[in-house]
Amino acid sequence: MAGIPSPSIPVTERTRLKRLPKRGVFDRAAVYDILDEGFVCHVGFVVDGQPFVIPTGYARVGDEIYLHGSAASRMVRSLTTGLDVCVTVTLVDGLVLARSAFHHSMNYRSVMILGQARLVTDCEEKTEALRAFTSHIVPDRWDTLRPVTSQELLGTSVLALPIEEASAKVRSGPPVDDEEDLQWPVWAGVVPLSLQSSSPEPDAHVRPDTAPLDPRVLARGARRGK
Image 1 (tube, rainbow, N blue to C red):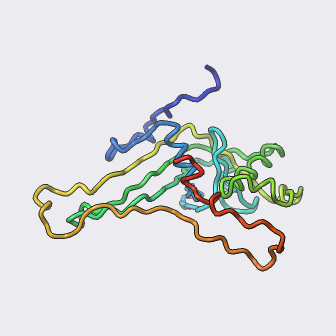
Image 2: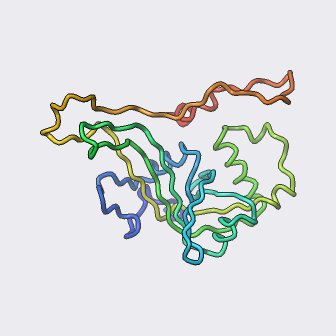
């Protein structure tokens, strides 16, 4: 049906995995799950031969991810000219400890998106993108906040990058030791890692009648249904 993206993201020469291709993932739902769980992406681009990689927040809405920043920032100024961009997101799930240094690794899920970003000029789309940024951090928080002002909208630039040329790479499971090393007397296995929030710490200006923040809304995996 026209307008509905394929369940799989097409493989291109730029996204085809040349090393350990079995770890490549092109299932759109799996790619989106990784993007939805992360908080920070790294935006790579080249200006006058100089590469830059900028860490920043993001949000996915449908088949695009949104980036935002000051109109005066290098990233925004550069990407609005139609530069090629590479956006990556990585989640580290565990430390993989082998019996040799050579086979130490990490369990991870990562996504790479290639393309060209467009500047969002429609006021309604920009507002919805800002809502998405906020909801990506804490679900449903936007509706509880002081409404965004026209000056804030004017001072914030939003870029949209379509998820058309992308791939994920995933490593899971135990270490892969050489057969002759399996009896070496050292502990080997996986140390699981996860991102967890601690108890919320209110600032000095929270009104006494304000409802406390429910820490359950900060549980990333739980709210993603995992």
